Length: 228
Image 1 (tube, one colour):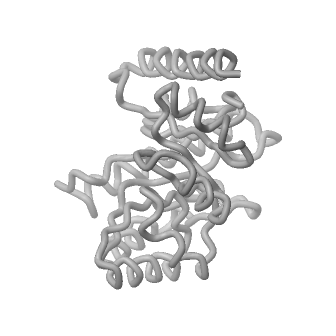
Image 2 (image 1 turned 180 degrees about the vertical axis):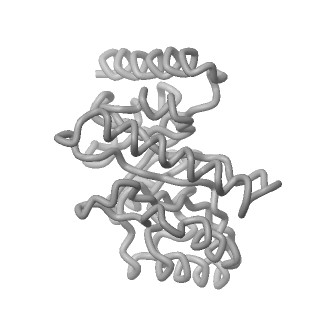
C-alpha cells in the first residue's frame, strides 16, 4: 500500500511543481494539505512516513481522535464548516482554521483565544459567486468586514479561503472564482494588511482544480481523492 500511496503523492507533487513553473512561481510557494477524512490511522501513518506533515479534516470529532493516535508534529487544518458550539474543542488543537464564515464565529474564536491566551491562525472563507449551497462571505464589503475582524484579539488572519464552484457551472466559473479571490487578497494586502507579514495565504484548489488555483496564487491546496 505504501508504494501506491508514494506513487500518488509523487504524482501530485510533480503536478504542483509543473503548475508553479508554468505560473512563474517558486517551487516552494505552494504547499500540500492532505485531506485525510475517513482514512484509517494505518494509512495516515504511511503518509506520515512519506514526509507529509500537514493534514486536513472537516469533522472535528474524527480529527481529535486522529490527533491522539498520530505523531505530534503534524499540523492539522480544519477545512470544514465549523459550528460555533465546537469552538472550545477546536481552539488549541488545530494549527489553522480555514472556514471562518461569519463575524459571530470570528468573535467566538477570538474570545476563546483570549481565554486560553493563544493566537488562532485563521482563513476568511469567501463565496465569490454567491452560491446558495456554499458558506462564506460575499465579495461586497469584504475589505471593510475583514478590517473589522482584524481588530479582534487573539485572531490571526493569515489569508482567504474558497471552494471551487459546482462542476456543472464549468471551468470558466472556476477561473472566475479563483481570480476574484486573488483580487480580494491583493486588495486586502494593500489596505487592511498593508505592511503585515502574516497575511500571505490563499487556500484554494482541490484534487480536480488545484493547478488552476496555483495559476491564481494559491499557497495552500487541499488534496484528498488523488492520494487515497
